[in-house]
Length: 100
Image (cartoon, rainbow, N blue to C red; front, side, top):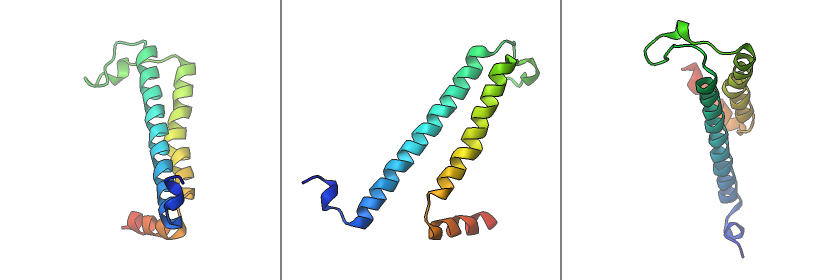
């Protein structure tokens, strides 16, 4: 008998949701690390993000386009996918919260 076989259906669903949330956060962290690492590796300018020398930062065009696509994926596509995976009641509560 496994640990999950003794759980009620609600508890099993909650654990499944928690596992999915951990995986989702892991993917987001991985994408952030890839985007940040790529920016650091391919930076060709003398700029510094922390000092505010944004004008001196430069990237090759192909890397900039790839990073833009990764940012669009991580900021829009993944959250929208996650929003479709929640139940109706939770979705309505989030929409009510966003409306203020």
